[in-house]
Image 1: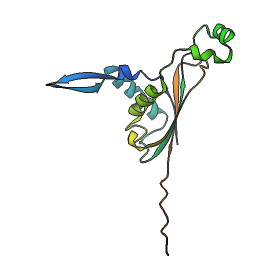
Image 2: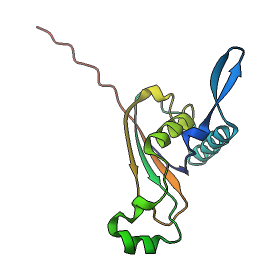
Image 3: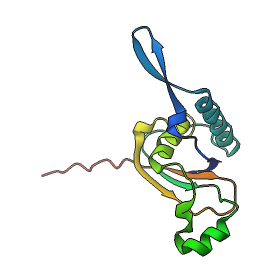
Length: 147
């Protein structure tokens, strides 16, 4: 199992950019995307990840947005739903960016993700971040039946 606390992901809108090649356009990662991926790689290695998990994996993502300075005022005005007013990347955008950044570092490839759970958390005062838990999934071989 791998547990990582990583920097808040960049938007997928800033992750990819179109590049004309001849008569065609291809999509490539931006410099910002490459920098994010490099930072994720260094942080994963610092956390003890030396090789990616091979094969099927289950991934849990907890996205912690930045807590604004006026969070107490928002809490008084909106009650328990105060964090709905906090700016946060869409979960689906965060998932795609994170899976791409983890590819070849903590997981072999995102095609092996068999279970993906993501949750937007209440800002808790720490810097905006994302907590990722990756677990290998064992493949259970069917038992042969003898009639």
